[in-house]
Image (cartoon, rainbow, N blue to C red):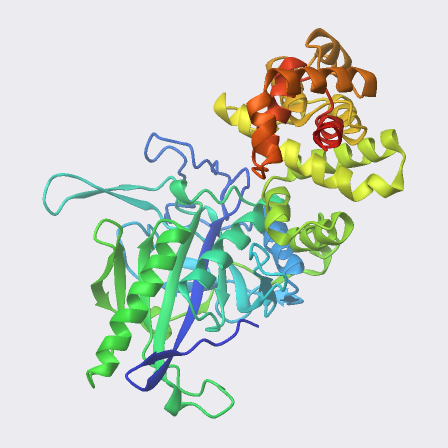
Length: 504
């Protein structure tokens, strides 16, 4: 569980209690209860509509099997209690973008109860969990398009009826940073499960925050939260970084109200991304305002046949495996968790390099070299060309040979970078050819290096004298001169050893 953090102001301790409601549009071919296309890229308003999703009299909804499979898949991944039989209910409210005057949702028996969400994108060694209340399935509403004319808005019903998952947490989050971690972790999970694109810019994933502040004195000594304080909901949040800022602002606002001896008003507030503040919208509705009752046109859904789905490797399992198998710190592992294809390529590269070098004593060094040259040098170069990683951009055998040459001190770090630059320009090039064509092979022959160093020392007598007088920093200059004279082909370690030996 997430640790409870106290806010101490003027001798008073307060506890922020935050619960989230996250809506995720599912990636299905059709809408939740009709055969209209589910397409978030459709730009022509009111194209993907029909009498069913528009709520015309006499029409009957038919549940989307694919959507049910996807919510149960999410519930299985999060360890939820999947209900043997789930029911749909009507949530009644009137709003211009709700064509039926009600929303088919779930209140009494949702598909998934309980469960917990790991905050696996944390940089900490230990992964915290957020307890979930439920995950239910419903249909989305339409979209209001505000015009420049005062008091006039247009309605696009393309989104009305799209299958929508709502995930509700318990109020066990206590900071804006934990809200950000939760949202980003959940977003990546649904990508792993391939149930949603979860693009927040397209509205495919939306987050609402419920936050309250309570005085520690109102709770028992073991921090059991008896009185959570007055709940305030924040909407209009378009990113998880904005959610983090909105929470921190609201914690500060509510704490100040309590400090002044006033009461927090239960309301719905919006987030102003420009002013970086929350603002009042309306008084908060209670659940009984929606007058839920069972959906009369839909029979209960038996879930047993949906429970035999195969889950992919979950991101927090992948995270732990990478940490254990490759002895990498969590910060380094996150890159391979966020980019599955890059992580898969890294594993192939490490395996190929270890098999090629075939010396167990070098295995950890091989892993570190693979990580550094792949994530720093290679990714850095393709980023300059505005490319994103693809396994087609790099041959693991070529890269493994590069790692072998580094381990055997046959090429320098500079030589490795030159090889990578050539491979970025043309993935079909061969490492051996690049090595030979650019004269990158390091010379380790002692006779060659001795002659090289002797000439450098003769050409720089004043620097030699400075070194002998105690100025040790001159050594790097002399080594640099030797490397320059060899055009980078001399082994720098052997150059240093012989340089020290001849300098006495």
